[in-house]
Image 1 (spheres, helix red, strand yellow):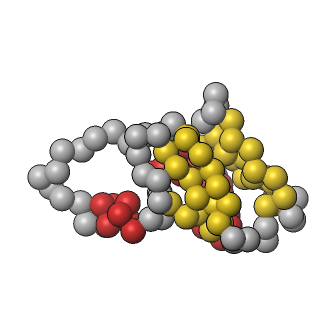
Image 2 (cartoon, rainbow, N blue to C red):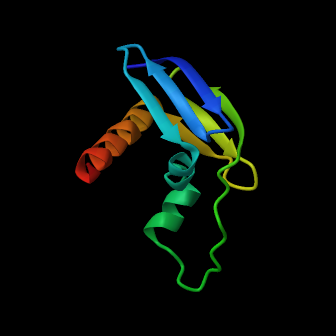
Image 3 (cartoon, one colour):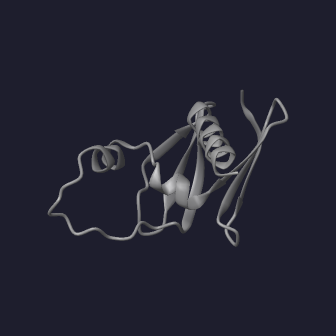
Length: 105
């Protein structure tokens, strides 16, 4: 599974991915930023420091860059710059959103 097209709509704050099997993913920037897979963000999510001052995450997209033929790097203005989002991880996010929507509806 590989994307055939990736579009970032900064107005709607959504990343749209068209996959080679015809599937379309619409991933909100907030979800992508909150679930950043980099080591620093993972550590903060899994072992939060109770004394750390929490700052709001940045959901403003700065850049998207390809990483080989298996992922993209998403950089957030004023936020994380190191998240490498594999195709598999992005597809898992899509499935997570669908499960959440089906439970809500």
